[in-house]
Image 1 (cartoon, rainbow, N blue to C red):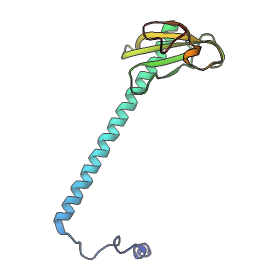
Image 2: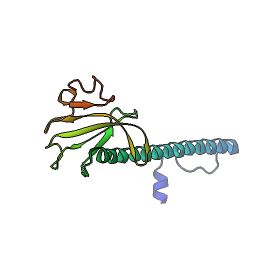
Image 3: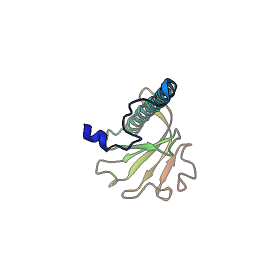
Length: 152
C-alpha cells in the first residue's frame, strides 16, 4: 500500500495537516450529502418509472389476449410514441411464428384497471410485412386515425 501512496501526485497524496480546516470539511460533507441525495432520488424515480412501464406493458399483452380471445405467448407490446399513454400490441391472428401469419394490432389507452386497459382502435397487418401505415387494413376504433391507418 505504501508504494501506491508514493506514486500518487502531490495534490492527491495524503497530507500531514489538512488545509482549510473544519469549515472546508463541512462544506465538502454537505456537497457529498446533497450529491448522494440527488442520486438516491433519481434512482428511486427511475425504478418507479420502470415498474410502472412494465406493469402497463404486461397489461397491454393481457388486453390483447382478452380482446382477441387468443392465448398466444408472443404478443409484442410497446408505446406507440415514447412518453405518450397510448400503447400498441400486435400478435399473429393464427398460430405460427411471429410475423409469418396475418397480425392483429390493437391500440390501448388509459390506466390499468383489473389488469387490462381500454382498447381505442386497431388494425390488421398482412403476413411478412412491417407495421407501416401503408400495410394497415381493416382499421377500427377512434384511435386508428387517418394518420395511423390511411387504408382503413
